[in-house]
Length: 55
Length: 491
Image (cartoon, rainbow over all chains, first blue to last red; front, top):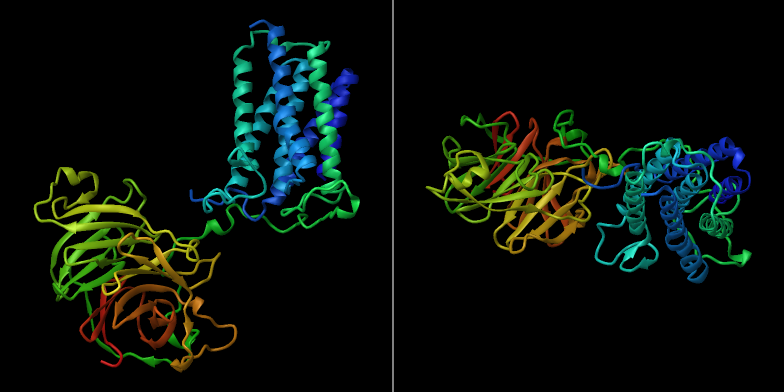
């Protein structure tokens, strides 16, 4: 999934560089990448979402 | 600052972020040294990539609020990821971490620092913006901007190569404990172990509830140990002295024939009849180290007492008639001139770390303090911790077993001493006596052999919180102030 996310990021940057008129699509891909990154991190830490420390 | 200078600064920031942490991670740590990120490291690295990508967006489209907002959001999330990841390892012994150390810190620690630096950088660049800059239009990239974007693309492509090799295509994803990176496909191991629909937890084992006596089954017949010899109650009466709070602990000093009673915040010295308060104080538990509700207390000598709280923090008090009341204002809430505070600190445990305690006992012969855990919904273990009086540091820790020749037996394979809920303890006759409020069971533990050598039932006990040995009798103090006296076994 990390590979997929990096591919999305690569395509997004290419769009910004080569086809700046596709700004809306690029931004949507950017948001998708952010959500995917957040979701994967939350899944990896589902045992304890917050840092395992005293509060 | 002129707008073009601002874009120059942003291009340099994108270059630095792409080359140093992200490029360094993939080319130096990954391709050169074989480091393979764990799943959390991957998300942190991708978070940095996204922050750099937001910079690319601003280079092309100007500092639109949605890009700035996303940059701040991802950086803040990155700081959270770094903190969450660091918390797994930060409190371990010196030098112990996970994966590669870079300039004295492990990568997840650097991640926290880098995301913080991103936030600071964005703040500085925003400060330099002028009114009207937010409505910027699509820009033509200058050579420096193009270099920044191309470098970014090269670094992202390299990361994609590493991600394909070490995590695989979808649905495979990063692993919690990855293997060494290799360009050789024969060494690639892709995994879906992190995929899970299991419900998450906010704090995991750290979300353990505080100890509480309500709801415990006091019937010895329902306990894990069978055929226990009962101890007969010799006397039952009410503690008649006024206390601030409910009793939480009891100790006895034979040299001065005095008892020590604790409440949630109070420390009371009582005469041998338990009918008169000789001195007391109410400790300010919120000052300095957080003293949770006291779990119990012990006489360290005839003038020095220690109260230990449920979170294994403690305060050492020395009796002092005419103590400096004004100077003691900072330590106590009442009765400022009866004690001086000697020290206030915390016991550190290993096996007992994720559990609270409700008892403390002191062995004057070996100068050892003992605490015993109470189970919680996350961790169920009966752990005895011993601390040396000299440095108040953990000196031994064990989970007692039944001694083979004791004649004791569990009521089945599913039963365990971990079911006990020890709320009171005392030391006598080279034995650590531990009283469980659950199942009204008194254990006699040999701390040298780390075994339970005897156990007894005490029917009719309701929420005992204190245990002391005076002569041939055990004194048991209950939460409601009931004082129960039972004859010591073999006395």
